[in-house]
Image 1 (cartoon, rainbow, N blue to C red):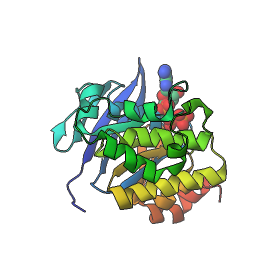
Image 2 (image 1 turned 135 degrees about the horizontal axis):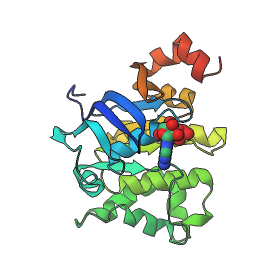
Image 3 (image 1 turned 90 degrees about the vertical axis):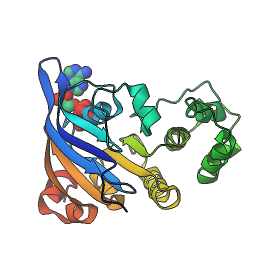
Length: 239
Ligand code: ATP
């Protein structure tokens, strides 16, 4: 694992009109890491993720990716640079088939390897292969989350951004989705930055984590350090 960060956020400020939601956030994600950003409702997790993917304007600070300043780059340019987002609520296209949803993830690519990548995604998620001709809307919540991750993988991202992957899922499915994220790190060498309210599930698989409180990074450490930290346990793990 190289120590040069793949993603480097420095002093990031962003908000909605006059309301500032992020008050100078700094963090980094190194190649091959799974990094979790945890925090309560309204702490600024989604705003930060949207600022990274380029759909939320920033007022100060910067976003560097692979050594390039992307602070003012369009969302489209960031996808091209290798950043893929799995949005909160998944946003799959229900009437389209599962396979067409996956192909949409490769829309910026023209290379001949799309078919091979489709097979890789089907290897990771056999249930998607079995049902590939069916409308995506018929999948369960957990399966839709898998589809959204698979679709993002189709852009061959260097960095996968996940917004609340556990949202709305039964505990057994939460475990499955996080097991998949761990597998992506091991087998596909994908770098992952994920935001979660489910701090336990996220920190359990994360190499490192950050805790965000009211728009500021309050704590950082390895996943294990944060899981055993008294303050984290009281505030986020209900212990
Ligand atoms: P949640 O887990 O509930 O989505 P979050 O940590 O993702 O929370 P954000 O959605 O980033 O938090 O919200 C950060 C702050 O910005 C909150 O105070 C929120 O009320 C405010 N905010 C979010 N979206 C908007 C918006 N469209 N207009 C105005 N304020 C907003």
